[in-house]
Image: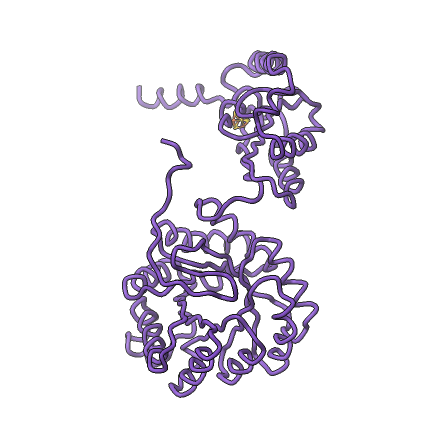
Length: 409
Ligand code: SF4
């Protein structure tokens, strides 16, 4: 089966717009992140927003916890390259101030703003200005009344009820520009809460595992929750909540969506072998150097770094471009065909040159400009020499098979 033809279903949701960015209703899943600067620090916050946008962030959130922050937003919003959402915690007045500042969206935590008249006042103002609100339920700050109702525990049912009660208040003032999140730091709890919410409403959903933590564990935890839901078709916008530079959140979100085929790739998809007894180079070092070299290049190709020419070109034959090490040389291949041989210390720069050429002129043109037969002969020479040196079983697999067979003799 053609792997590129496999796609995930998407749950049908309503569509809202955060600024000019659509969320839900079949639009591409978007990546969000949050600034860590003081929002009153306009230049510092904008610098971070620019870095986030460059890393693939579609919508950014800034805290609006005090009047100075709202004032900062009034300066930030018109200069931001992406829509800005104000994060409101306890004071509904800050939501009104953020609306005055011109934000493209609000995030309210129903566990923190609980007075119906306050919720409705904010929804009315948002309605008048056509500004959407995210109902951001958080397992860690659930409404105490719901916590008690569900036996002193945070349950998926309690989180969903919190979101639906907020919607009921919004309904009273005729406001429906809504997206919802039911985040928790516990992955199974979060997954189940979103599943129940997806059954209960057709509002677009914002996915996240809250307080996922530092790298790399935080990325794994968040990916487990967000990825599981996206594969089920649930989720319209996502945020990685990492204890790291927010640029890492944007990168992780972008990579996840690209990996799931939910976002068109703009950068390199770097694949690399895990290395084994056959490796002729430090695969980790070369792969890291390649990742750095391609980091800022918009080249939507799959590029492989392989540890040996014995198996590398075959294992990565589907890559657009790749390099495999062999006896202090790098064997470059395009769509599985050998095209060039370069000294080991020029492997990465050669990859970049060829990637740029292929991205501009296509793989056929790249193949046409070289003597592929000569390159294949060189690769075969190194392959045979390595087989000769290392034997056919460089990983000692056969010895292990023999050992385990002795046990069962
Ligand atoms: S056989 Fe070669 S390409 Fe495959 S994992 Fe080992 S070093 Fe990498």
